[in-house]
Image (cartoon, rainbow, N blue to C red; front, side, top):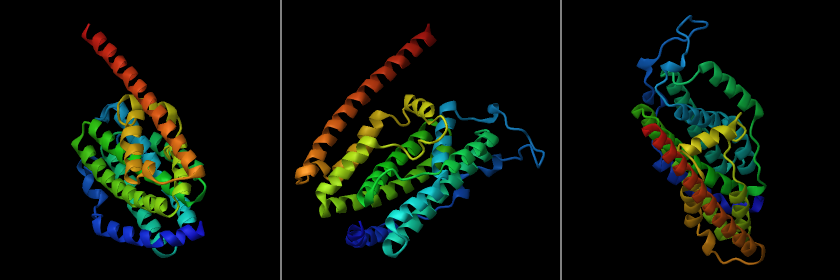
Length: 306
């Protein structure tokens, strides 16, 4: 791992410089409708929160809270990537820059939710405390597996933020989440470029890592209370589902790093076969899910029109 860290250092430096030249400075406070805010009950004796005050649908609120709680675990994420990548040189500079940029996301989303009274502030804070107390631990061994995971994860997060904004019905929310998603896309490009370089340096090892991560991938917020139920709700709304995971997350990364076109041997070739089989099965699962969802929607519309 130490050898690979050193070999990838020039690639990290190159992509760090590209990122710093591309990333745009932005300020969370500019995306929050502060004029809508007012005191809550409690210490300041303001108005209690009521579900009727939220202009968001239930699924939009669920997705926003899941996205926010995922962002909240940033201290654990920082610890994990700093432990893997180190705190020195270009690696360390990236770790701290990434952490600073990710910190804006939680700030902006929480301020939006509270200013617009979109969610119960007491329930939100309790959920934050519970989720952060559980922390986050990297499930993968080694540098390449971790880079593969964040390549997929950053893209998945971009998709989730974008689609949450699109279904929110609130132009302010959509604008904010589009801004957050733009950050996530730049982060994905950084990690994807590292993954591509890892394939150039150690194609068989990289393929084994990618096959393992793709088959076992979970979003970092999977430890949120009732995450399974919330994920089903989010999938039924088309915010993030198996079809999107296959088509808009796994396939683009695999294509960009030319994972299936590499010259491989031994365990690397076997891992590629496993990856192809997994992707084929996932594609079939995604099709079945979409068919069931569309059938359920058709029945619901028929009942509503009856």
